Image (cartoon, rainbow, N blue to C red):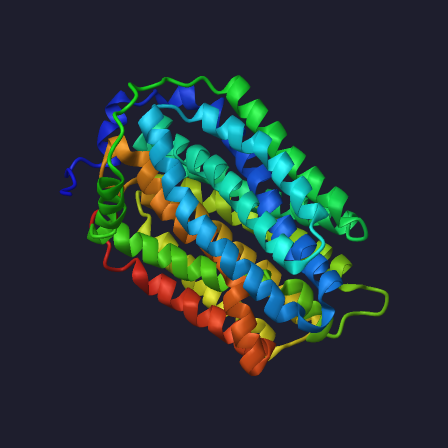
Length: 413
């Protein structure tokens, strides 16, 4: 199926004026904060604790298996959800429905009492959250002019450090009662969905006719044949995979690899590291997004921040200590925050077709959501073969390859 040369940012003339997007930015921030609170709180603390409780002898392999199976669901549901959102011409109903369904999914996850049931429940939670994510991610290309997308992407990107910190603090607070922790994180997403859909006015577009499944699959594959989009996808996938391969195993790293100060347990240590990373991430998210708008440069910021992430992952290799982990968290937070803010703006400018924005952002979100779940699967294989030092080295190599992947992009400076 041939793709139109029309680009998503070409419709900026029909987008709302910059002033009208101001009220939208706090809602995007809140919606993304809740989403990342669930993703990171579950992935970094609750899921590892639950699996360790159920199968302590095989916790590394079991966490990898659960993450690998759930990655398949994340991969499938995000572009499918985006296509359904495009077809309906609406975003808000999918945001609200996904948010409310997150409560049921997290309640089921918390009640699972075998590794198999945990895997099934996490797959369901991933499916629900990807409907929510596909829709809320598409709001930026839908409603924000191209010239303001760096700032809008900063508002979206701030959701990651703030949401990560909030999610880990909530999860750590309920480390001994992870069922309650799961439910609280689900309720946060539901509340964000209600808030967003109540306050963010939507301008529905005409609903689109149903497209045969074969044509939909061809379109999903076809968008990756567009060189700029393919390179953006590749860079995002590699860097996020390297990041979450380490972050997803942070609890086990602190348990089994790093000598912690007396009186500091692994869950409490995660609750210290995450705000350190989050503060650095928040600073670089705002700075990167605003500066990339002013300078009109995206690739420079994306490439440099991905390279800095690779350097950050080498710090625990050189210094596998608690101070080394603190330094790693701060530097990696700076790198990852800038990358996510500016790369999101870059991606909105290489979407092949404006009318398929949600579907194409859904395909791109595979590179964002998939590695968050796939990371533990990759990490378990690396740790099983050589321990935690090779895990940091693997993450650094992936981040460096992610930095190199943005160089061939031609349509964006």
